[in-house]
Length: 87
Image (cartoon, rainbow, N blue to C red; front, side, top):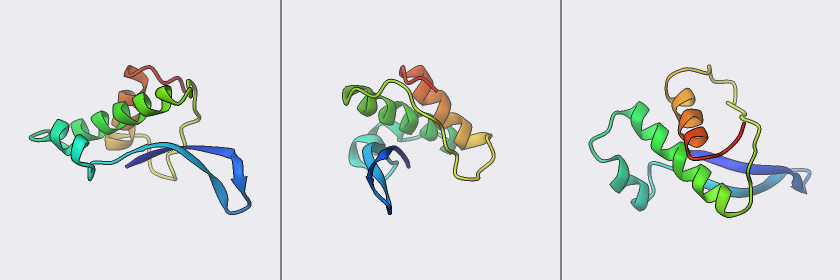
């Protein structure tokens, strides 16, 4: 899964989620059928980027949550970039 969060909005507990995507969603499951986990992560990144762009978000800061920037984490970022989101 991936989320686009506005940290400046919300309260002391956290920001406001502007867009999200997950391999558990029906629409995404149909797109990733038969793909490897890395390729599925790229699709998830692209879907999240499309949703963010639809809400007017054009640029983000990529917080990998402590995970190394490799494999599926990198694929999510690559998919989002290819869909037009700027990092």
